[in-house]
Image 1 (cartoon, rainbow, N blue to C red):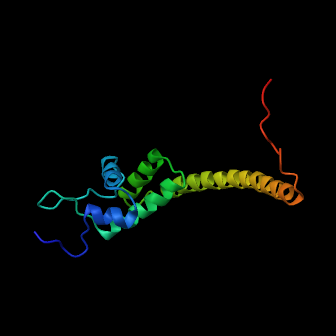
Image 2: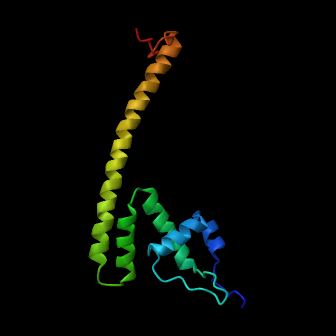
Image 3: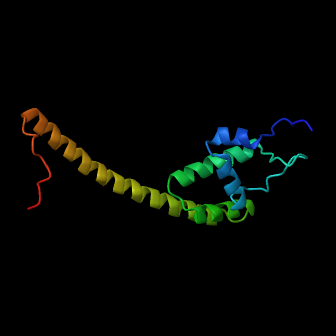
Length: 139
């Protein structure tokens, strides 16, 4: 059976999304796709471009810290079709707030690191860096 236009193999989807073949199989087992992934007459998974677009969104949500359980719920809501957009929005807003909180924490961390960089730069310029926070032997 020849491949039809728009059909993608698991390897092509892996390359397009940056996910491993193992991860794609995991996503399928966990019900994270929006549709059952059909198989060719030879038993190979057959994906569509829409599956790639969905996976790219899932990658962003996961990379931003969305737990698998929340991603599964989002996929379930999308899969169930129109009528639950308010629930999807609430889920996305919750995740957005979590990401903004994490960014705020990272900015605070960055500020501390930046101040330490400035202090070390000053010590290096002034020739006073020797011994800055050097471990002292315990007695």
